[in-house]
Image (cartoon, rainbow, N blue to C red):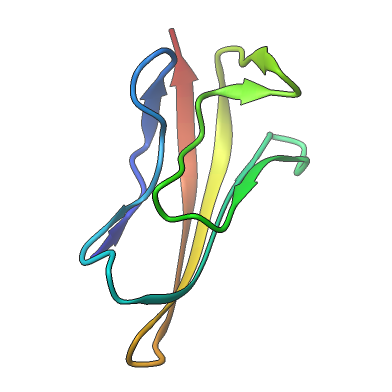
Length: 88
């Protein structure tokens, strides 16, 4: 299961994809882009998530694009993307 929540409230646990099970990942990339396509956040750590900040500052209410790409232990490539609303 790979799901991307479509909303995130700042000052709550970090925003990250829901991946079940997490223990069978060979490769993982999670990215957040702003509405202009600029990379806002990227991690290769499946336990890390976006805290709504950009360049060290709290984000502003807006819609961003979330993208996750994984390869599981069976060699299957899975990618998902979708919009995420950042709000206070």
